[in-house]
Length: 388
Image (cartoon, rainbow, N blue to C red; front, side, top):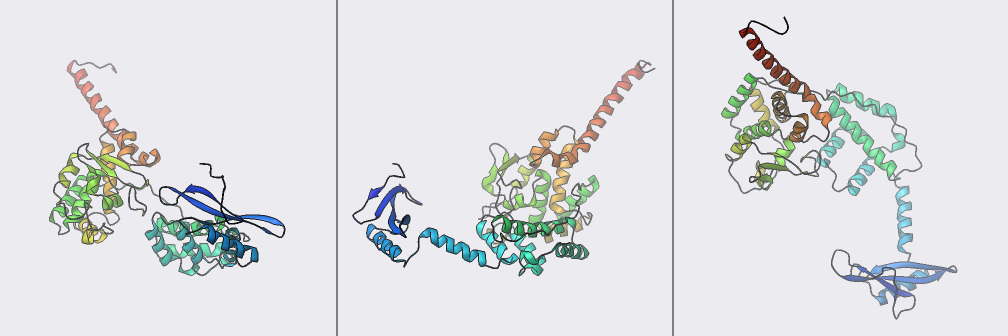
């Protein structure tokens, strides 16, 4: 049925159109009023049959109020709200609240809120025209002087820039020219953590002897699969595809799931499978549940205790570091292509995987040398060589 078709009612100046019902099946009527104001014909929507409990009689009453000037149209109401909104003092705090309101499924909200509360207190009640490039630079320097890492500093500055950019994009301060500059710290994210054979043996011993059994199994699972900490936290039993031998990494909106935000899957190898079979199915959907069977949110204290007991370097990150160890060992075999490694690590771009390329090259060089040595033995056995 054409949405533009009008249906008359018994009330003068009131008609309706039929459209699909909001939030349910079926059809409902949307009522409109037509009237004159200042010799101009105005047509305005007054309400829906079910959503607004609108009837022709009620629509007629509203029409009369509109004619007498006792009521304004929905469009006029929106314009009034926009004018009031434009008069509002848009502080950084107000913009941040509006940002969250318009993005209810914001990924990583908890982390961003913590950064905002801890590091951006100075800017809460400031408007954008009060913020200068010098203030941004002071924030960067103060964070650096307090010992914050470049990555942390970059994330804090990026959050402030994102809030301001949101305000500009949504026209919350259209008459202001925001000219602040953000000088981001240089990052070196190419660090590839690795462990020697003796360090791995020490880690296995520490895990075997620790009282933190769950943390130990989670660390082993990171080593066996290369999964990220957040992916392990979010792992549910329903994500284990025992029949096909895969683990489904389901993306989450809070930043703790698959990093790509999409559903990925990685193979369930023998070591990971054996470890999963040692875990009892508690009354929780999670493989490694937190308190009361809910999702795990933090296990740093226990993981760091195991790291310390194993004598690992202070800067070794228990979960992310073991993910690197997994990737390094896979690349070192020389049997896995960079494309396959990218898929195993669920990297969105092959650029991230290239940090392990030299390990694969080393393995290929060793394989080539083995071949060279084998040929040398053949040549020696006949006391001759093509190079002589």
